[in-house]
Amino acid sequence: MYTITFQPSGIKIKVEEGTTILEAANEAGIGIDAPCGGKGTCGKCKVYLNKGQLNDVSAAERKNLTVDEINAGCRLACKAIVHGHCVIDVPEESLLGEQKILIEGAETEIRIDPLVRYFSVVLPTPTLEDNKCDHHRLEDAIRKVSGYESIDMDLSTLRELPNLIRDNKYDISISMFRNRAMNIYKSQYRDLYGAAVDIGTTTMVAYIMNMTTGEIVGIGSMMNPQIPYGDDLMARISYSFQQDKLKRLQGVVVDGVNKIISEGCNKAGITISDISEVTIVGNTAMHHIFLGIYPKYLSLAPYCPAVQQAIDCRPSEIGLNTNPAGNCHVLPVVAGFVGADHLAVILSCDIHNRDEMTLAIDVGTNGEIVLGNKDGMICCSAAAGPALEGSCITYGMRAADGAIERVNIKKGSLKVDYKTINNSRPLGICGSGIIDLVAEMLKTAVIDVTGRIREELEDGNERIREGDRGYEFVVEWARKTKQKKDIVITANDLREVQLAKAAMYAGTSILMEKQGITVKDIDRVMIAGAFGSYIDVENAMTIGLFPEVPLEKVKSVGNAAGTGARMSLISKEKRDEEKEILRKLKYVELATHSTFQDQFVDAMNMPHKDLSLFPRVMKNVSAPIPKQ
Ligand code: FES
Image 1 (tube, rainbow, N blue to C red):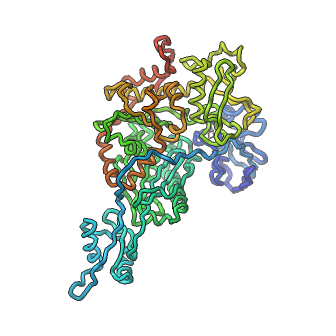
Image 2 (cartoon, helix red, strand yellow):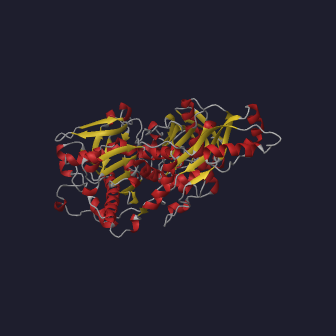
Image 3 (cartoon, rainbow, N blue to C red):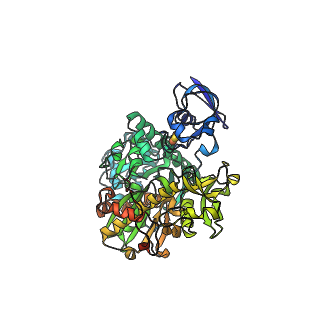
C-alpha cells in the first residue's frame, strides 16, 4: 500500500499499487472534475506530481497536455497510476466547484390531497360479547372514516398494536399510505411530512413538504455524488456495465438522497423517519440507476427503458431511511431519452389539461422538448451535447464560482464586459455566458451567420487572433484570470455551440411539423431547468436555440421537474394524471426521422432576417444521435 497526499488540502489516503490518482481522489472524497469519466479524452482532470512515483506519461496525456505542462509534472489524474508514495498537487481549476443549484420552481395552485393520510378514531372497548381481534376492531373504525375496506399492517406495527390501543384508552390516531398502516399514535393531531426529490445528472434537490398544508418546510441539495464516475450519463452507464459497479453507483446516489432529505428535515425540525412518502424524478438513466435496474440497454439502439410505468416500493427496498412502512413513488419515464423529470415538467406546466399550444423545453446534454395541449402532445430528445453546459468548450465550465455568466461586447472596440458567479476572478465560461458570448459576437459581427470568426477583423483588433487550433476571440486577458491564461472562445467551440443549438432547433421544428403548426401557433414557451432560469432568452433566440416568438410568451419555469415531483407528492389527482400524460404523449425518435438531417443542417446557421442571402454552407455536417 502507498500513501497519497493531496495538496493543498493535506488529505492522505492509502491505496494499492496500480490505483489511478483519480480513483484515489474519489476514495479520499476530493472531487476532481472528470467529465469524460476517466477515458483520458477531456483533459480536465489535471494534477501535478509534487513528489513520488507514477507510471510514464501516457499517449492520452501527450495528446491533452502541452510539453510545458508535462515538463512541470502535470498529469491527467485518470491516467496517472500509483507506483509509490506520492504527493499530488490539485490545482483549483481541476476541482469540482459547487454548482449553483436551482431550487425554486413554477408555482401552480393544486388541491392538497395526498395519498398519505391521518385518521383519528375511538375504538369500542372490547367485551366478552364483542371480543374480535384488535386489528379488525381498528379496521371497522377506519372503514367508516376512510372508505378503505381493509388495513394492511406490517408485523412490526402489529407487535405494538395491543399495548398502544390499551395504553391510549382506545383513542388513537393512525397514519396510512393508501390502506397500509404506517404509524399508530396516541390520539393527537400531527402533521405528516413527505419529500419530493429531483435527481439531476449534476445536482440533486429534496423538498421537504408538510403534506397537510402543502408548504415546503425544508430544502436539501447537493451535487450528484456520481459525478466522479463521469460527468455525462454515457460515462456512468458504461461504468455500471458490471453489476458490482452498478451497485456502487446506486449506493452513492441513494446515500446522497438520504443526505439531502436529512438536511431538509433538519431545517424543518423533524427527522428523516418522519417522512411518510418520497416522490422521485430523474432522467431515464438516473431512474434506472437509482432503482438498481441495469441501464446498459438505454445506451444501445433502439434505447428501450426496462420499465415505463411508475414504480411504488418500500423505502427499505431501495435503501432509503424514511418511514419503513411508507412509500417511495418513482414517476414514470417516457422513453430511453425522455425521463420522469420531463413527465414532471409536463405535469407542473399543466400542458395536458390546457387548450394553449405549449412548447416546453428543458435544455441539457439531451434537450427534452414537448409540444402540445390537452388534445395530444409530442416529445423528443435532441442530442444537444454538453456544449451548452460548458463541457467540450475550451474554457467552458459548470455554473460555479468564477464562471462568466453574462457577456456584453461593445460594438466597434469589441471591449468585453462580463459578470462572473460570486463576482470572482474569471475561471471559465458557463452555459448562460456561452449563449451571451455567441449572440454578442453575432451582433457585433465578430462572427458571421455561418458561425465563422471574421479573420478580416484581425488587423483592427487584438482580441481576434489565430491560435493553435484556428481563429479565436479573447474574452479576458491572462493578467485578470484566475489561472493566468487568456480565456478565449475558439472556432471549434463555436462549432460545438452551433451543433447544440441546431439539434434543439431541428427537434422543435419536427415537433411543429408533426403537430401541423407554425411558430405563430405557439401560445406559450416554457423553459425549464437551471439553464432556462439563467439564460438571456433574447440572446438564445438570437443564436437560434429557440424559435423566435414574442418575448411575453416565454416563461422560465425554474425547476419544473421538482415542482412536478412535489405535485405528485401532495395530490392524488396529480398522481393519477401521470398515467393520463403517458396516454396523451407520443415520442418521436429524431435519429430516424426523414427530415431531421436537413432541418439540422439548416439550423446550423445563426438566424438572420433574410436567410436566403446565406447559402447552406455547412457541408459534411451530420446530426448527432442522442446519447444518454
Ligand atoms: S481526461 Fe481524465 S477524466 Fe477526462
